[in-house]
Image (cartoon, rainbow, N blue to C red):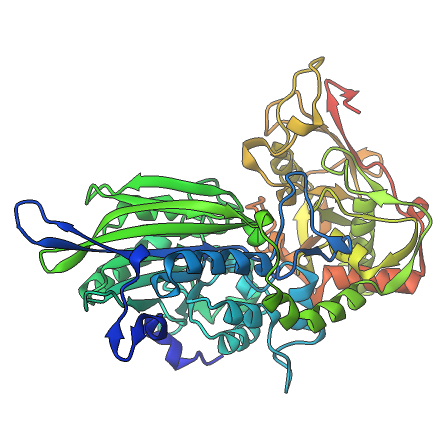
Length: 604
């Protein structure tokens, strides 16, 4: 599709001009400026302080509300979520520092993650003729964001919807390494330069460079292939930071949708680092601070020394969903005809310490009511309650439900065709340990909690040997636990930081995972219809598009032949199946296909 020409260039804006000027004269702000006697110069130094606030991984959270449980959000740490809470914190900082001395930026993953964001992408889409304004755009505009980097989840709904969201935002979406596949020019604004007015008549130019995750090329291949390409963060930062400095930037911030460090979930499929923020700080000179995203971790402050300049770069990542607000405090001094950073530090503020901003909640009250009504629609009943609480270490009926629906869907699609005679296996992950299906009425929100991602379904052709390798890779998820040693489920999973969504349970055959063995040799008694699996046998694997595209770097599946695919979200396929069935009875599909063992003895 043609890309918007206006987004190819960075932009420059004056921040807080109205607040900083009165009758054309700069108004000093006591909290932001100071003068002192310059050492050995006999004249006062000019100093100016400003603050950059940052959020990341908002994932469609405006209200402190959990649409999956239909009540106020709460977790074990009593965190709160949402832009309405963030707005209160932002306004407090603006009052303390002077609005004209502050900026507000975001590091990506804005428009996916809650039924609120899904509703305005799929149910009442913003791309429709006379469609609504996206709630995240309305809230962020009202709060007064200055810029936001693109996250990988921005591409989940396709480029047209992202472009519409971009049009609705009063601030630029930045992505210096999101390039047009044909021209290799930036498809979005690479940067923005904000001008802060000081009482000394010498403005401060703050550049914000946006970088996103190269994994988009893998995770959203269907949406971006042939349209956009995503080179590495370090490579593009090295290109743009010197340009920003040559354009007169006094301070350079990077909003990077990339964690500080850690393992990659796309392996060697693309030659770039997924969590590269610390590498960018270490290897690209000229950066003062990085607002980090993507990893869903809380990093109040991390200092990385740049190898070339020897200067410290300050990194901070606020916790996801609006649970935290990062605050960078910057102090400058005017010397040798330019502004220099004298000190820079960061901290995070907890959104559970404040009330929601009624300006934001009132603004989107109608949208909130519509989505609450939508997710509470009854789609059927269940004869028994099913929970994901133990699903990371047991074969639970609720995961069997997902696999059953996927298996039946693929079998129906292949019926009468070339691959109809092949056995169909299915993979599913436990996306949330708090989801489940209640006994009695089942609603859309129950299904949405089981499958919160916008994944679609595919069918790939694999051999028995490839399935065995796939399962071995998945079994790395468990911490090695010797036979006879006590088993603590709180410490049993997520070995080497592997998240729950990168552990797959496969249905259609039976197997054991011996957690006393080292990773790579754990799958035992792998059988199909009671017989040992033939390495040369062929199977069809029902698999989500994230995994099929290489997400998680599971072996063989990304290169396997695709025999079927559709564009319907798996969540909607589950909803349609429940509606058609009317009643969900675990007795018709639940089975124990896998179990954890140690030297042949079941762990549970």
